[in-house]
Amino acid sequence: MQYDCQLNGQLLICTLTPNRALAGAVFCFSGMAPLAPVEGGTLHRAVGSYTEIALPDLAADQPHRIVMQYADGHRPANRAWMPLGPYLRVGDDVIVLPPTPAGRRVPPRDPAPNHDLLPLVPQPQSWTATGGQITIDGITVTGDALAAVASLASRQGLAFEGAHPATVQHENLPGDAYRLVIDTDRITIFASSYGGQFYAGITLLTLLREGSLPCGEIYDAPRFAWRGQHLDTARHFYQPETIMALLDVMAMLKLNRFHWHFADDEAFRIDLENQVVTTPFQDRFAFEIDPFRKRCLLEGLDEIGLTLGSESAITQHEQTRGGALPWLDKPQRREAA
Image 1: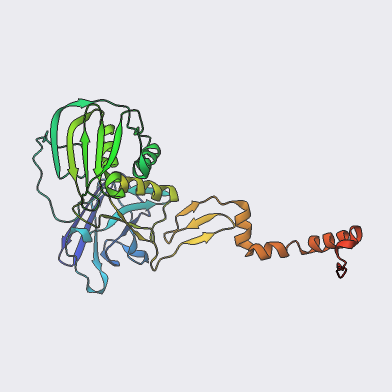
Image 2 (image 1 turned 120 degrees about the vertical axis):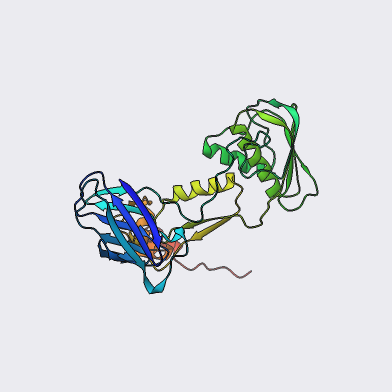
């Protein structure tokens, strides 16, 4: 399947060339704003900025052109306004279309490697090599910040905690800055905050993934106070495990803000009884829930409601107890002194 899209003034011109004949195909994508077909198909469905265009029967190896236009007079500013996440739906099959480059074109970089760079993203502000390398199985973990890095490493299946001595010392450094000194006999972290210790630990974890640690001194501090990642779950459902994995990746890249686009004009339908979530695009995802919690949610039961549900049993117990232990219900009299 070949796919291309070009801007032509206010029009978007997409060309599909299937490698086999397709009948009843639907062109699906999202956009910066609602899009409407001008030529090459008819509007099948539109939800917000998500659009489906029904196509005529497509012949094998024959290009088919789809011309579209943004609604409400929106004019595409650059290639980022092209269809996002395009795919074809043919019956129960989904054909993911090749991505189209978006945004401005960046000139290619010099492919020659820079051997002064460390295998870190982002690169530290300074790196002074003292020569030599050490191969270790991990470091001794002290303090909450390095313990958090060790926990992250465990979730990622990476080695971090080991026997090589590592110490954390306080040094008057700005914000989340740190200084990391790697010697053959010891690793020392200098920082003034939890964040500095944590990012130094992330640097060590990343270097350990590459094998040997280079001996030397690293100094780094965040260039930007806000280093974020955006996730839009208003239009697409993600399993909780996927979101948690994303947070771990953010930590590995030293990002510190999670921009969660949680809700919008679209909505998810939660079928609690059948334990299924349905997205606005009719994607369905099963989920697990504790049976007792499910019952409480379905029946609207809190602690009082659960107690009232056993009212007859409680009444019977009180009557039985009153007959067997009548003195418990009699008022107690105290003799005056």
